[in-house]
Amino acid sequence: MFDVEGKETYFLQIILNVFLLFINTTLMYNLVYIVYKMMRLIMSSTLVSARVPDELAQRLESLAQTMHRSKSFLAAQAIEEFVYLQEWQVHAIKEGMAAVERGEIVSHEQAVAVLKSWAKGV
Image (tube, rainbow, N blue to C red):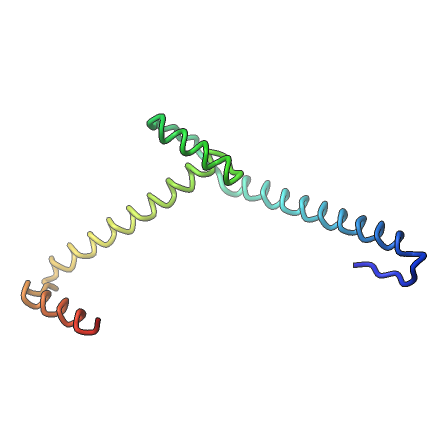
């Protein structure tokens, strides 16, 4: 950070370094807060409520405290991951069904042969 030579100025050096650290930390905090507020303006949100078993609610509360996050944040993250996975699965099923309609299928024997060929490399 700030470097001052000489033993007599050591105390001054410590004070200046602490001051600069405080300034940098304060600026960083303000920057993070501004970015957070901007993201809240850009990304709108909707309140969704769900009834969950007591045991799950307690687990969520415990996890939120451990992670220093809100229950709402963790629930939103869990819903996001669940919806993403389900969307992917539905899309893959639809692709498979479309392939069948186009006649892009193989026999059971051909599929088993391919699977066995994969096992040979193990």
